Structures are given as C-alpha cells and as structure tokens.
Length: 430
Image 1 (cartoon, rainbow, N blue to C red):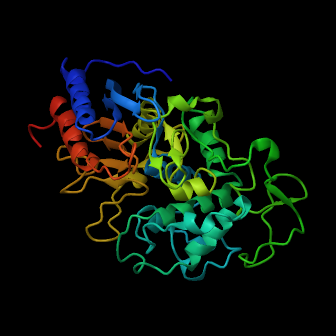
Image 2 (image 1 turned 45 degrees about the horizontal axis):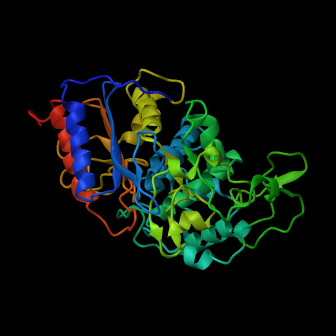
Image 3 (image 1 turned 180 degrees about the vertical axis):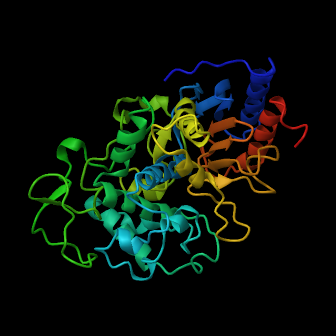
C-alpha cells in the first residue's frame, strides 16, 4: 500500500518526531525505529531512524522495513478473527470453551469464556516454556500437545478474580478459531482481512522447521483414522473434502503454514531481532518468540510480521468502524465492545484483545484519553489509538537486537507518545 503523508498542525512535527527516534537510536534504546502518526484519518508523520540490523551486517532502517510484531499478533490477528466470528454471530463473548470445543475433555477449563480469555482474566498463567518440552517432538504433534498441557495446567488464580496478561489464553483462542472456521489462523485472517485490505507485507513467517507446502502432511485425515486420546469422543468435524475429517486440534500443523507473501521477501527486508543463544543465529525473518517458533512459526499469541504502514491500514479500518463511518468488515457496536474496558476485575484496564490507557504508568503516556486502546510487543512494537482525539500512533522498533535484555523502551514509549500529543496540540488541557 502507498501512504501519502500530510503535513500536520505544525510544520516541525515530522522533524521533532524524527529527532526523537534518532535520539532513541543514538542512546541505544533500540538499533532502529519506524514511527507513524495519523490524525483525523490522515497520516501526518512517517519517519525512520537507525538500523534494521547491526549484525551480521549494519543495514539502515527504512519505512518499509518488516518487523516481528510479537504480541501485537493478539489484537491485529487473533482478536480480529474472534471479532469477526462474534460479529457474524458464529461465536458469543460469554460462550464457554466447553460449548465451543464440545468434543474435547477440557477438565476445569471448560467454563472459561471468550470474554475472560480476551481480557486476560481467565485464571491462566502468563507464560510457560513449552518450547523446551516440544523440542524433539514431531511437528505434527506439537500443537495438540501444547493444548493438552494448557488444559492440564493448574489455574494461576481464580477465573474472573484477577488479571494476568497471558499468552496461554490466546493459544486457546487460536484453537477456537480453527474449530469454528476449519481454517488455520493465517488462512482465516488473510482471507477476511489482509487480502481484502490489500496488504502485501503482513503475514506469518514459517520457522525453518516447518515443512514446505509440497511435502506437508495433508490437513484432512481419512475417516477412521484413530483419534489421539485427547478427544472426549470419536465424533469428527466434517469440513472440506468429501469423505474426510478435519481434526481441528491439529489444524495448523497438519497443513502448510501459509505465510502470505513472506516466502518471496528477502531476509534483508526484515528488522533483525535477537542473536539467539538457543537457535545459535541472528533472527531475521523468523519469529522471535520461542514457543511460536517451536510450533512452526506462529500461534495465537505471536508470529505476525508487518510494516508500520500496513499496521496502520488495519488500525485505520478499525477506527472507521468504531466511529461509524464504515461498515464493510464489522458492525460499529462490535468494534466498540472490543475496545471497551471490560471492568471484570476492579482496577483492570483490559478491553477485549486490547489494553486501555492506565491512569498511571501507561506506555501511552499521560495525554492519550483514558479510553484509548493499544498494545505493546516484546520485540519493541506498539500501537495506541485515541478515538476521542482521533490520533493513531505506531512505533515499531527492534529493541531486542542483538540482545533481549535492553528494556529502555519502557521509558521511551511514554516520552514518544507525550511528544506526539504535545505537537498535535492535545497537552494544554489534559
């Protein structure tokens, strides 16, 4: 896609933002960054600074650099798909996992609802090093094993009585998407969103352990194939080819991992992430998250790659629906519900798949409206949208390159967002 940058309120705006991210690179907050700011539906700033890689070679950042979005996968892919299914009334926010995955023995996880999973109030742990146990297991078994382990995992707290930001919840949401659609997460989101939006550099990139499409095990298993012991019954979910059964528990490993246009993109187009001590190489064009990588390149919590311009295309689409000026993908009330702070747990700021601005200490700074929605990613990506002031701010960085222990981005993000709002004239009466 091609974005036309319109000069904003202040002719110095782009220079100030560029200077700020240049300073961030100079102070080693990150090797490089791309910043995009839009106001009232028009992009008023698109700037880059620093380097997309330092090792094995130093390459300058460009505004077209493709980033590993890490946890931005949650709102920009997984929650987007759930939003579509809710909008189409194929799912309901207060529907339980037991209803949606009725053929599986979910033990004490059966009463968890979409609303609690999306708002990180489902009682699940934040993260587990599943990759350590999955390494060495056959690829076609890994997603099934992961889901078994999550179901077996004890609750970290009583569901609905606390908040813990959880990758595990979004791993389960990916399973729901597969079950209800008969498609993998990449297939479904590409068909319903990235393709129609004309996105060419937004995709899931397969890890090197993924089988190529020509040699991948067929997604559809012949009727009569013994089902793994995880199944509660022998009932198959008939979709696809005649005379075949789609085993939704394995969907995503049995079929090729579709990476959109990713296979045709040179490695040098990506922002490098970590010089990984586990994989023994600099990661560039493969997912940084170890669990996602072990699962073949993606899961419901991580694995999406994109550019600042294409992240904006998704955000702008959601903005227009929330404001009621567009209705081709969703009904306005559906988007507004996903953007609404849920207040399930007192003091929680989570909406559905999205965060909202906390009263204190938010990465959005102090000038974004309280009901702004956003998200951050471990690799250094972030997005914040203020529908009251009609501002979208996207900051993509490779702060984990070459090592993940650099956390200066935590101090930089609120400074960046405060500068954006000040220069747009929203600081005076805040």
